[in-house]
Length: 63
Image (cartoon, rainbow, N blue to C red; front, side, top):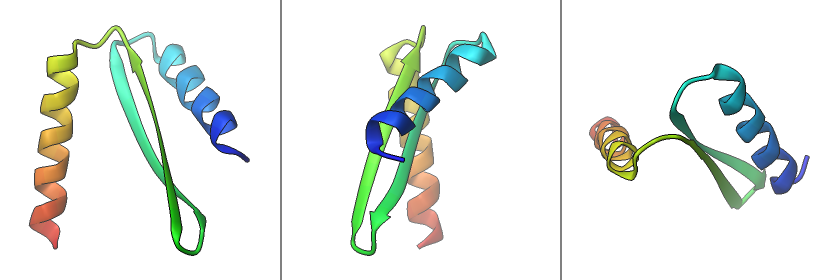
């Protein structure tokens, strides 16, 4: 599955929830190559940044 197909599936899933939201998905395409896709639906940018900040803070705390 290529990046554009993964992007489309993320958008379809987010639309199917009927909720405002966002998805960020990182995935490994090759041993040393990582890709990312994201999708937003009726979500204010401030809320997205706040959510991503909390997620990054949690990830850093696990290192």
